[in-house]
Image (cartoon, rainbow, N blue to C red; front, top):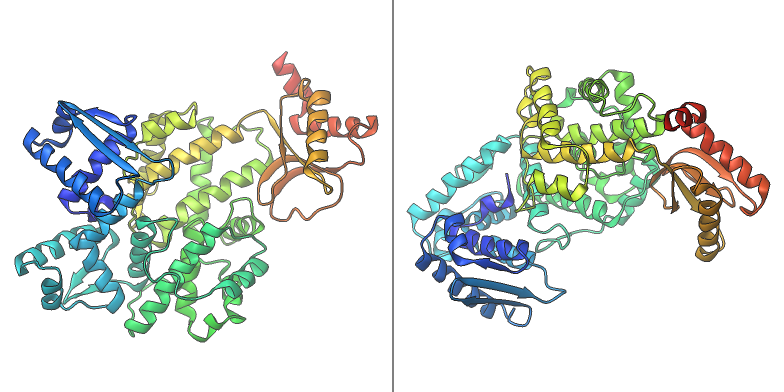
Length: 497
């Protein structure tokens, strides 16, 4: 579902007006808007008045301006103002979101007190509970007896999805509750990976939810087969808890829930050594996830979406990416997409990929048929699957390019690195199809050129060459030999000529 599902209708339409104008270069026809929203002109005018009142109340006048002139509606904003600020306000004003906040903070909700605080009738309150239950059913959860009922992993995943979708950059109120830096250092060391700020925030949010649930809810319900699910690298995650204060409050179930979250929410790079080890561990244990990924990977090959001559590193990258895509479907049910104007056609256009909507939907249909006996088969045919497989095809476009990606590292300064890149481009770039880029940790490259030995454990690289001076004829010849090896030169040139 989209996060707009939690917003009340008046706020939702006000937000839609803003998004419509924002996505249409700041202008639009009022007549067109009445047709899109299926409302009368008088109703639309009332919403425009409400929007301008909201702008004044929030002191946004210097950042956001909406002007109505006859049938024309115009919109402008300051360069540093985010439309998401309005969306966040609309969401937090909505009764359904406030009910969820109350359930999270206290595990239960006092219905009479809540009704008085928000000045709503019992009929309105129970109607909102009914609407929430319809949304919660996607997560196999429900609100009964004034509390959320369901399996604990699903409850935590639901709250994480809500709060992450509310604002991906700025933590909601009271987050983060604790300093997890020690835990992150342990995790990076043990998993041999690096966590960026977004990944750390995701984990902080999850751990804060875990702490809150442990305080407010003493007894948890788990699925009957929970401990038997595939978790081949669980021991590595468990070690990360041992040397931090989290170990005092975590049991085996807590560690399993964190593991499921960590491998499902793209908390690590698909080119990291942890991603490689995870893929190999699933292959070795012939897990359900491995069977899914191998079936999808073979489908992509059979349909010629993946070249048979793809390098091992690029193949590993796609396999690791498939594990990240399918893990969420294996460990959790339901989703909340933070975007509100998402469309696969626009995404495909932005990506400038040769693949089409049909390529994506055909893959989704294949998964539906091939995995029809799995309890979570519907997860292969929802909006999130459509989004994930669209981004997968975009990655395939990058991977299938015959262009060789050459990263350049220089230990002294960026100026010398730039000169090296320029010389390689002049000497070899016109002869071979090359993309020459600065080296960055945690990325995958076909070839790395470096003036000294460096630690590349966080990257996936086919060939590494240590040069002394790239103006030296010897170095150039050796680099050219590596490029030839990468292309399987004779076969490639014969095809090109």
